[in-house]
Length: 431
Image (tube, rainbow, N blue to C red; front, side):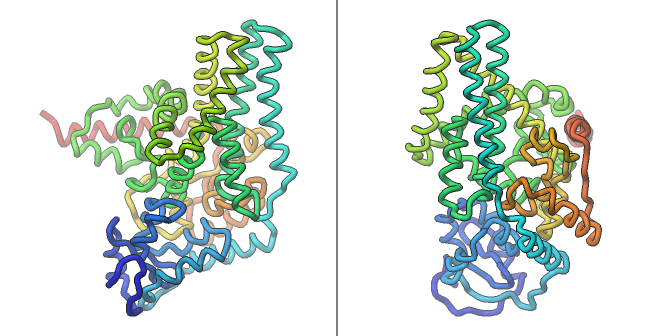
């Protein structure tokens, strides 16, 4: 049988055959009961080969619908079609989820408020202006430098939440505008990489908390999470880190260093490997403008200290928010769950409030965001009651926590996983 959707006889195929085609060299997937050979297409897939490859040998119907706003993308499937699934059965939970999505469409929940996004962008620009003009108007002192630093860190964090909206194509009907503003907010306003974010983040959404597929839980160099990874790592005799103390060193190695060390170290490596020279130039423009504006006030070394201090503050903010929704949840190997169960087992919500909504960029509605990643964030609260009802119908846990409780649960989860690693390691490698 030909590769990559080459012309061949189309046939009825059993799942036992389809599931075999799950390697890098041989990839099939199913959408709506139809089988597609994506072996060659995955190499040029706009979302990257890893993203689409995570569903090789599986039913990708709901994932396809979640990631693609426009029906026109189906035209790319036609040359790849090789057959149909024998006795294809659509599960009740998937049917109900698609019905819910249609209700959301009729409610207008996928329609963005341009006023909202204009205010979000204006907030960020105003914060940057306040950062620099605090030093310009009031001069340099400990008070003004700290105040300026706070303004800069808040601007960076809020730009992070805003770029997330553009990256998910949830703001404009024309995706080209989303891509433009994604580059503007992520690369020019933050000095990061929109392309790298797409590469990593969409994999996370496709298979959240799935070991080996979600890059956000590819942590075993420093941390073990969940109740599967600690056992697997311990059995492999990996003892390079004292994982039984990870809940303690997390405070030093996790939140403060994620952005200024890890992200900064891989950023330019990614640009060079992918030959993203234009994006790298845009990122360097941010760095150049920052030091051009700050060095006259603070001098060279103090400007560098200011830059990395801001990164540390932003990193703390992002890490605690991002991990509160996922690390304490179910982290397992691939189980090929339906879309609703896959997403909700890996996510939880944080209690809504004016502050929590702003502080988390509306990612306190993490469940709803994962189910409907292209829905504008200001509408997520409207679909939440319907999502909760659907979860109750199918006996899926719908978890909502206070903000501080969600932070404490990160600590508790790391402690529990570390203890499990220690127990397993001692059991298998006792001398």
